[in-house]
Image (tube, rainbow, N blue to C red):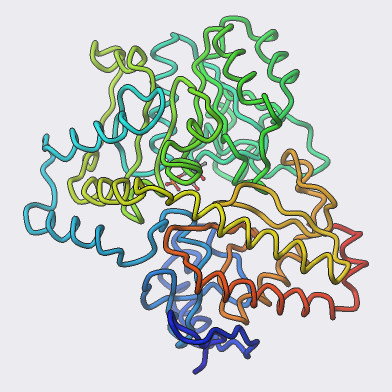
Length: 459
Ligand SMILES: Cc1ncc(COP(=O)(O)O)c(C=O)c1O
């Protein structure tokens, strides 16, 4: 067998290091780049040694690539595949809907079913709207907040990712010597498009207070990832998110949790349930529809009145597409089964624990950060990072060596060292993951320059 992992469910599992053959992927990338810009469909997918991989198919928590390798997947397609590929409930729901209609461009019962499901499960969510991607839904939430408050400015935090639109792709990856101020992340972002975006450091309530003081009655919304999953999975300090919500209330601004990652991942009720908080609005995508294109904004009923009375609009040809909604309904119903999230968190915490203990055994300095269902690994840090700037001190070089060592044992994690745990990961997968971690850490320990690189923090 060409792949490193030789086991399937039920067989004995041994994560042995094998030479990883990626010849076909590499040659497909070269061919792809001739006609497809970058050779990949999202800039985020360009990273990842030895080459961006091309896949043939997925089965449960496993991916099969074009070179015949099989990988145990902890990327979950950057989060959505919480049930893995081919979950029978989703297949049945989507197949049934396919036989009825692909699209209506009009109303159907699925919209009511999913709205009622969400308002029943998400604490404080009284109404919802649907769209297709997280990026779109973030824009809808901002528009609602602006129409509701009659204000233009909004606050985002450094290192937080809210999609690729110009007004939010701001100060996402600043350098350590950059000042904390609104900075474009890439070319093609004219300054006037983010002139209404204020940037402050996260986990620093004083900084947010100052922003409100400096812009009285002008801030429409504060937009935050409840866990900073896109930059090292930093956790909010105890009480921080509540203070953000309180400040928003005091200043008449709309508080928005961007739950594109945390929604239906931290708990069935997402960050609202996990942290026991009710922001004015939340944005959902990814795990809500098991890999199908579906996003939503949910929250306080009175905010959505700006749509009822025509103060603003929400539109989109594919909004409420019945196939995506069928996938969403099946996914959320499946995730609602008792014990689902406890199992996922336990799986993730077991992996985090093993990464930490294996590193300690070899004297490798590192920390993990995040929750059980989404977390990040930071080499060269002695404690979990609290904010984006802390993550800059970690070693991207060691992280990528660790990722490659895992890949050689058939375990797939994201290039930014983020792990996603799903309901699709069971005991057999945990055994494989722990063995692969032990082996990969052993590899790291044998690299002579490791200690030196750890200190340099090459990110
Ligand atoms: C927190 C957050 N918000 C928004 C987005 C954008 O979602 P999409 O890629 O579906 O447009 C992402 C994507 O990763 C995200 O992580």
